[in-house]
Length: 103
Image (tube, rainbow, N blue to C red; front, side, top):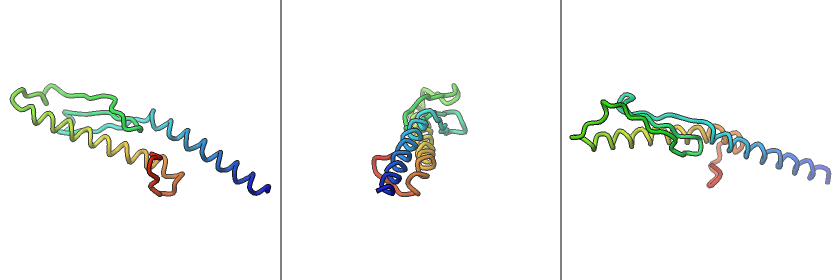
């Protein structure tokens, strides 16, 4: 019975550590860029878009499609980095297993 109590304490401690790590992901930021840095975006570890920065030279009224593509590329770059960050931070709890809905 003592073993079971000890195991439950360990599980509770691990849950608390996971929740703290998940919260901390929200404070971490990654940046994605495109066009040699003319477009950059910031995303937090929860994959929420925080900022979009566009340098004036990226804006060409005659080529709006290019700007749209640059933004998409930068956002996807940042989201990929946020995914890597989450996998890195939370992977220590799952030993590399992909658990749907966890992160």
